[in-house]
Length: 331
Image (cartoon, rainbow, N blue to C red; front, side, top):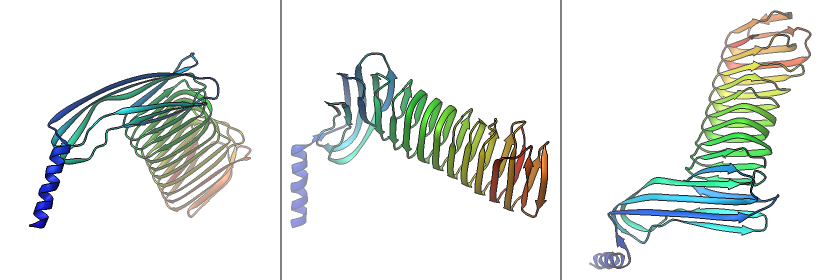
């Protein structure tokens, strides 16, 4: 009896302080502008909203936010709203989306019809971006970028800056015309990079494919479960570590290159531009080795291994795989 009375009292308290909801629509729009100068940094926490960053020539940062959501369900809740904190302190502009949170009894579902941030800023502004499920697009930037996403995609285009740092849990990264020192760490998602001048580049992905096309600079790739494809690359050093996936490398040419590939379970196919010279060694545990080169000297092939000199030698190619075939040939 005492427990029943306490439950009844709690229900009456909820009914007196909360609102019964069938359907509720929330519309919010924000537009803030900050005067800035060289050395400014933008810290944007956009949560589940998409963020588009566009450069302009003004010494101002303008942030426009649109939030439109439907809340449907039954029961009681103590309020459901959206707000954005805008702050400027010295050389830091901070924008934080305060997404709806509430105490509820019953069942509620939120549908986001439109939730995005549009940022116009001078390209010298350093970017610090943090999101959950929202996608990010950055174009024409010239200052450092740090981006951390949970479940969202990232697109970079025409980004020429000293440094780019990316941490992504479950999303795709696509970049084109990228010139920077790049470090990318991902959990579950693909990476595609076209036309990059990288000094250097380090990509680490647990579950996803990695593609680099038309890139230059030092390249390091680690993939646990996924394929790695490097097409038309020019690099003094390429280091690839794989576990379960195929590796395909096409070298455009660099007389002093160093190629080191190691994988556990996957095939390796390396294609060399005509005229490249290198010393090579291939080791396999359970797989076949196929070498097809026109200028081949001192070629030795035995059980699970092969070595030789291509042209005049000098550069280095090392390939190791436990369970997979290896092919070394010309383009």
